[in-house]
Image (cartoon, rainbow, N blue to C red; front, top):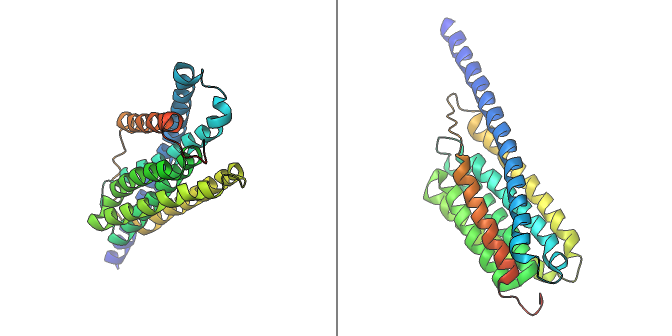
Amino acid sequence: MQTAIREKNMADEGINYSNKVMFKVERSLIKNIIYTFIFLSLIEIISYYAFFKNIPDFFVKYGYYLIYLVISIVINAGIVWHIKSYKHNFTHMTGMMIGMTIGMTSGFLIGLIIGATNGMFIGSLAGIILGMIIGSYTGNCCGIMGSMEGMMAGLMGGLMGAMTSVMTLNDNIKFLIPILILSIIIIIIGLIIMIYKEEIASREDIHYKGFQFLPFITVNFIILLALTFLMVYGPKSFLSG
């Protein structure tokens, strides 16, 4: 009887500890997403006055897409930060789902935005490279299987994102992009819930290590500037001018 009570108390303590970790991670996630969005938005404003203000019709050509580029980077950076904040390996099934989801979302959104301004080839190239790298990096939480799943999803997502842009350039693409980004956000929220139910709530001992903010923001800064200059000065197809 006493053993059963002790086991029940340990289980209850494990669930409570998991909930505390979950809330700590989510609070940090929201805070870092807000900070990152503000920082990257300021970088874009500074870049405009430093490099792009003399380009004719800059806001007409690129302003709309730069806003959603910042949003896309922040969304995917946030979920990467979330995955890497837990100090344990995930199961193969969860890790493969993580790699597939993040590889697809990052590749698709980058391919979508760059494809709208530069065309199918450059959009696909940017989406594939970033999608495969990010998908592999996040999928390795369960080993090589998750990394492979992330690379395959990044390859497919990058191509599909750029293809979607090219196919809808003359068919309300500016209305489609926010709908697709909202859909991606819903998918990512579902991934966060899945991770909690499958990996966090069922464990008695969860180690949260956080993710250093300076390297995190530096990588986002480099990616944003590289993609912005690619959008403005990179090769363009005849469809995108």
